[in-house]
Length: 147
Ligand code: FES
Image (cartoon, rainbow, N blue to C red; front, side, top):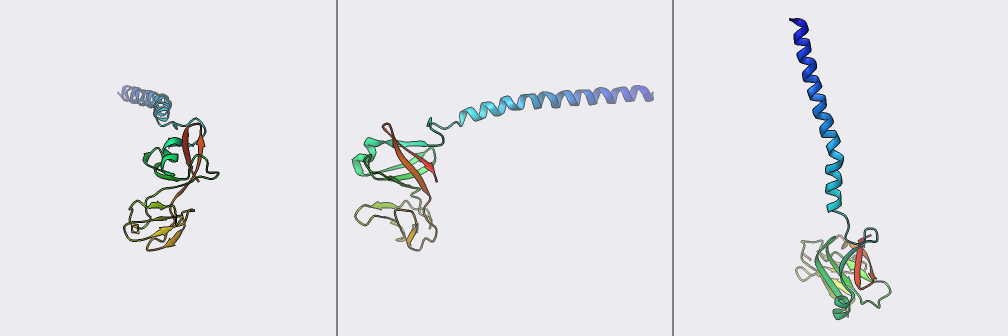
């Protein structure tokens, strides 16, 4: 009697370990399948395309609300040496800031916060700078990556 109970336990243990082995061997395949779907769209590292240089040149700025890195506002043209790119989401309450070309600053239409071209707060009520991105022209595309 004692021997047969022991045999049953061993069989259960064996099934348990085989089950774990199957799950463990399946995990790398599942992880590989997921990671291939989230691969960056740009071929150069983590640079992400947010629009075309033609769109940027048309207005001297380009707002991409649903880019791969989120909302991005790029300021300049394809001829600009150092493009500026920020997340235009105001750090006060989340309105979208606008670029004022003449004043060379970002202004929030909701409560009047102002930010410099580097994203730093120039006037409250916001106290936190805008998130900035590195930006450049690559072929006919405007690409950005978090700084
Ligand atoms: S949401 Fe921009 S100043 Fe309040």
